[in-house]
Image 1: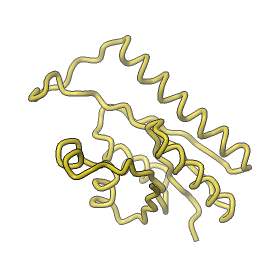
Image 2: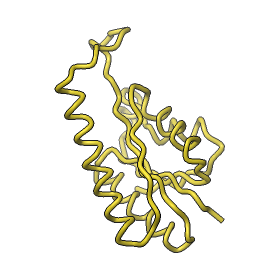
Image 3: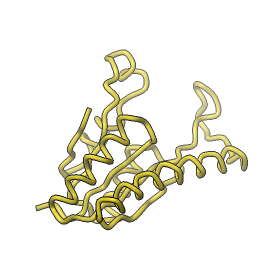
Image 4: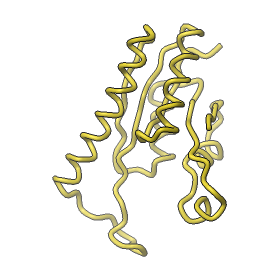
Length: 144
């Protein structure tokens, strides 16, 4: 059925629960997983049209956090005996990074957590899960 499962994470509780469930599914199916995260550069101001130049200290902190989350996910996969790869995407919108990672690892399933945002938050912030669902033909399993 599914042989390659992409597990995006931002280190949140919802994302890490989805990673754990995705690894459980992979173990049952004999599939491999790719864990990934995205480091997104933020606009220079609320209405900024450009991106801030990379600041070495912020870049280091972002990469440290990404590696911490991916280390945690890989440990869960290792404990379950599931083959695991990792991807860190940079300087893209998060949903685009997830879609690119899915293509890169030839994923046939994406397992994502949702944060359960309310309507107002979704309008202003947006949902990465909704954006992935809107732009992919790959099946997406969402967990709340």
